Amino acid sequence: MYRVYLDTGVDWYRYTGKPQMFEDAMLAAAAAQERLLDPELRGIISKYLRVGEEMGVQVYEN
Image 1 (tube, rainbow, N blue to C red):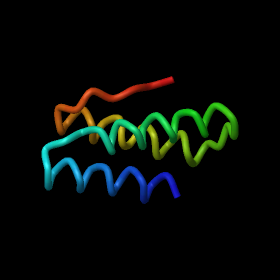
Image 2: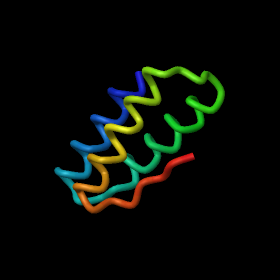
Image 3: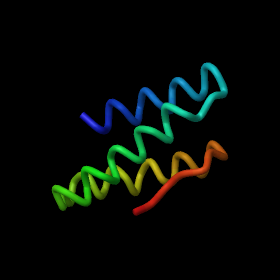
Image 4: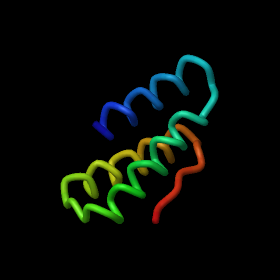
């Protein structure tokens, strides 16, 4: 679910140049990771941290 949200945020940024959806998705995924401690979700977050940095979007890591 978070991967789809993050992918949508990336596509939205590429289409509109607005990073808000991607940033919101990163915050939601990080909050879920704190609750769930899911190693797969941690890997997804790590991937999208790199994607965000490549796009030049400020990303968050909790």
